Image (cartoon, one colour):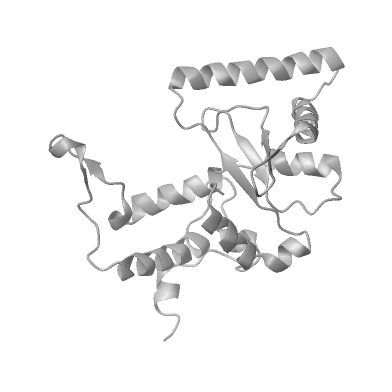
Length: 213
């Protein structure tokens, strides 16, 4: 999740039981979004060289093992920051979409195996959140990004903004059902509900519209 105290509080409230049982982990993710394309390319190339150097120096044959090795070292060296005692770790692998990615484990209850902890950090990403946000903006016109006008000092114009904010919640509720039960992944060919075992196959719009009848 993005670094936001409200989102963190909502996450802890929604997944309290799973966090206590250690079946769910939450992380803050911070990404340098101000980098140019050239800066991102240099960051990706630099990270690649660092990983290759570690593999050569320590005889590590697998790239994934090298990344986890670097992560374990950075986790152990992480310093506590701020009143909430957050510990930020920079991911050793830079990508064009997530350069200079820093992560903070919010649900670290202690006693976790260092290999498992490194594996958790390596999975941390905003790709899923960003992908869903893109679907929201593309499929719900009232939630598209505002347009910067060439006049009026570059003010933002939201041409499709709803007059009644209640409509936003209704549209998001509809999209959530469509996303979970109708839209199939291009990779797995399954909907999120199918992957979680909540549905045996994808659902049609007709199934949803006439379910209550």
